[in-house]
Length: 172
Length: 185
Image (cartoon, rainbow over all chains, first blue to last red; front, side, top):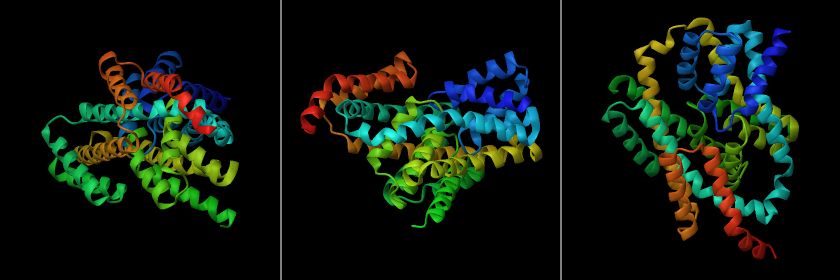
């Protein structure tokens, strides 16, 4: 019974979380800490910090963490499936109709308006990461060097991240 | 290609993408572009940007949305299930391991520095994508003023990014529909 409740709770959270993981932190906090008392506030904050620095979508990481805390490995699997289900179903419906959609002038006009916005959103993503994590000039210098390297040599994206991480251990 | 191999390949590629995505969302665009657009040619860059925009206005993590979408267009429902599982599984395994074995990992200074270093790389790669996308659109009055308007909405008025996207889309419909209608005839 608890497993079904976990699934439904995370399904609900997955369905109302727009724009990625950070946006669901307030929702998770209200539901799981304040309303259901599944985890403590202290544990919750610890989960947030790890979820943001481990691979994978933040919301998936949070779901796995809390699901495990509430009901072990089965809880983790069920909560992760729950949080992923709404987007899975919705995108499936969109994928089914995208070919027709793309021919429609209204869709194309909508997308023409969305593209300049994407650039602004990318800039704001950089701002969010830098303002939260870069506390002195050094990370900014690192990022600038990595940017030049990426533009000039187009290295494998993963390789560049791993190299930056390794250099970071010694220099940051 | 043999259907079973194709599905396995999708699983492997999305597992790789899921494994190396830190911080979620935008951070994974450069890697996905390299893997899905350039290397495996599952999707064109234009379609990729469109699916990305769609994922921003629908609930759920972008990684899952893109995995579901490409999985489906490549191999139907089975493909979408395997691609989505592939992209989720690395996080599931890593978080389970951390929950079970490494309780103090968040406070470790070397771990912190490693991830900070990675974040500098993430910022660089997002900047690269921003440059890349801006090269793809025309430098005309509509695009430039919409870009400036979006910056104002995000940084000064501080509107939820979903609405910023929807406002852009709405203005697109308002000013660009005629152009596309006459183009399709």
